[in-house]
Image (tube, rainbow, N blue to C red; front, side):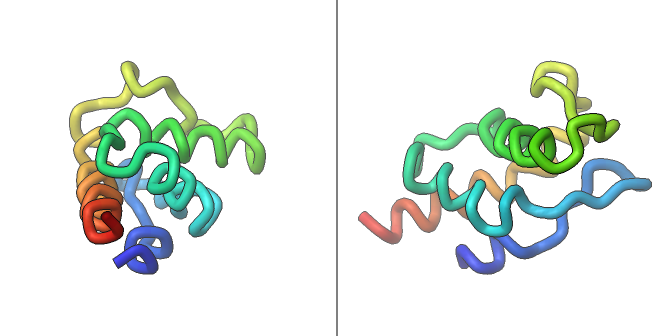
Length: 90
């Protein structure tokens, strides 16, 4: 499950695909640091932090509060997967 979580391409919009943060480091850090308490805000923030180090001028870097509901909903499966792995490890 963690492999799927961290390697599956993610859609930010119809015209832009993004990769998982740090493939797999970003989500692994969320798993270890937040576990089942990870939030829908944490996933895009992890991606934005990762992208800032790789392409600081990337057009899709935005605060969570500025994401459309559709884009924010794209991260729900990742939150669910991180929580499922965290619960499986406890």
